[in-house]
Structures are given as structure tokens and as C-alpha cells.
Amino acid sequence: MIRLVPDQSSQITRTEKVEFTFDDVAIWGYAGESLAAALIRSRYLHLRDAPKDAGPRGAFCLMGLCQECVVVLKGQTVESCRIEVQPGITVTSLRYGKDD
Ligand code: FES
Image (cartoon, rainbow, N blue to C red; front, side, top):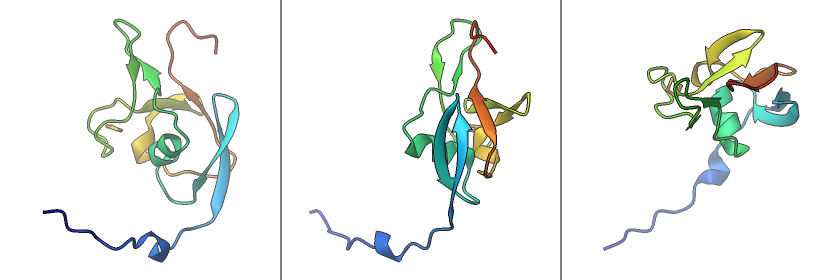
């Protein structure tokens, strides 16, 4: 038996939208949410390449354990699930063989 749950999404209170860039594309997130959440919502799932075979990697655990969501922010690799979206930040994917 399937129980239908009423849609309560209209009751969610959102913070203001802030814009940042990912791989030179302007995208937005809600202030205070994780960078990984904003990237996933914008359909950026391939955040880095695997070092061995350059296979696509993206957020998995969303709690700072797996390291799959690593991106480059201010020249340092950071876990995007542990960083809050901030206005104007410039984030790039971690790709091997990509010109930086
Ligand atoms: S998704 Fe696992 S560390 Fe970020």
C-alpha cells in the first residue's frame, strides 16, 4: 500500500540566493547551504577526476567522509559538502590534464 504524503515543500523557508562561479559558469545557491548541494541542484555532478584513471567523481556521502566531492577554491582543494556557498566565490573542478 502506498501512503500519499501531502506536499509540504511550500513551507520550507529559504535564505537569499547568492551567485558564485563553477568552472567559469555563474550559478547560484542559497546562502548557508553547502557548495555540494548547490552544485547538485545546478546539475553539476562531475566535480573531480579520479587520480588513477581520470574517471568522473562527485558527491557521495555529503558529510565529509568520502572526499569524492573535492573541488578547488582559492587554490586549495576542499570538500564541497563542507563549504558553505558564499557570494562571489570562484570554484573549479579538479581535473587532471585540465589547464588551470
Ligand atoms: S560528499 Fe563525501 S566528503 Fe563530500
